[in-house]
Image (tube, rainbow, N blue to C red; front, side, top):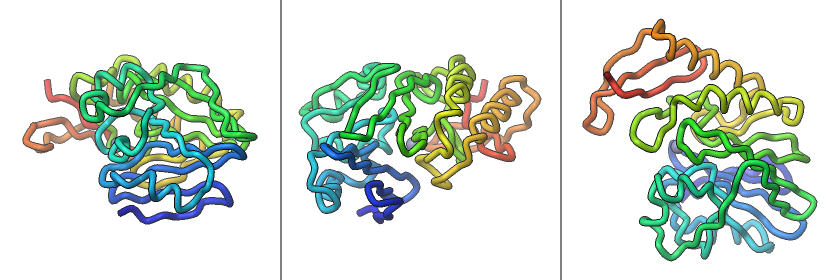
Length: 231
Ligand SMILES: [Zn+2]
């Protein structure tokens, strides 16, 4: 059961242990952005807060962001993650509603713009809450360690995705992250990009740690961290 914190009159965040997700209410409907790790009842929780119909939009398909999926008949998610992150296999009853770069989902006087940012996963998207001037960035921009290991990642595309987010920076004032601190300043995109470039250049020291039984490289920079395969 997540702790619910009101951000403003029609926006809430759900603190589900080490991960968080969001509820955004427009004039006609509401959108849950992700559904946590331990919240199969995410939809019921949303219905306590809004009487509008609730849709589910996912920033990406990792398991710590999808626990409430089975409560919904369809999930708005980038098609790459629906398959690569096995959302289809884990939630066979929930249909895919494709979202792609440039799509706008309007909740009623509250348009949400989809920005495809492959890297952390191939189907990762950021969601620009246009009128609130907030960027919901999933795991791609955050203070914690960003997973960049395993078959569903596309590290070679991540830098360009961060550049893409920076190119929208006139359209948002702050960033909401899924892990660690919730609200980050908009220049955090550049900070994460600089840190990532240092990691990619091979100049950043790392330590080998055990992550769920695998030996991985853990990079800890001033602003965020990364987990990479050790090779
Ligand atoms: Zn995550």
